[in-house]
Length: 223
Image (tube, rainbow, N blue to C red; front, side, top):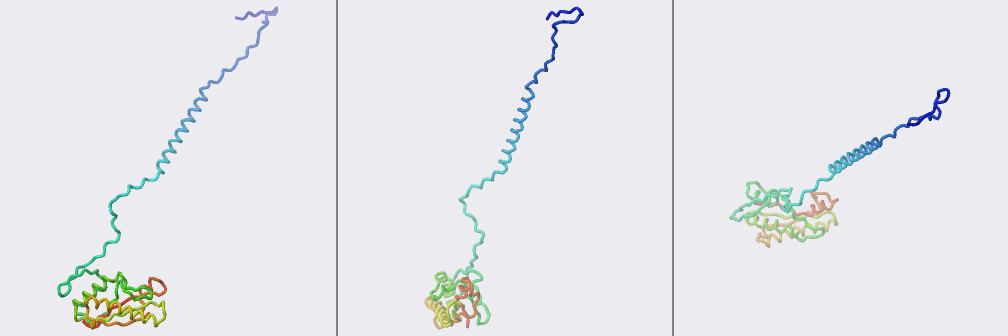
């Protein structure tokens, strides 16, 4: 304890004025702020991860080696027994299918039919390769109905001059007739004529339309 002297008047001498010093603020407040900030940051990171997981694209299924079914059903083919017992396979709504039905009916002649896939190349009278099966089936049908007589009429598009188109139409009809005769049809039953570029079945303004017009038609003149 400090000894203090009192003066004659009873007052204390040498006494120092004591000033209270405030206590230092504890560091725990700053620590709580830091912990709160870290917790907030952790929460933000968790939310970001969840968002990234939800946005991730779904992996595509593994490719399968199994054959994929065609969206287009196969074309139906019917087995037709012709007079005489010969059987051929024909697709409904084609020239040969409708022709054999007509020849076997009581419907009178004449009747005109248009070939489904007998369209010639530009400026050509050569029989298209994909028409061979059609001509072969036609020969078998005509052989099964020996009383039937037909006229083949060839056509052209409007690409060339009229004289050339008339010539092409005639040559195309002769090409089909020769193919039928080669396969056993009596030549006396088959005649030919030309339509040139007349009576187009499609527009001559497009390649597809011109191809459709380079056609051959069959007319049953007697049965």
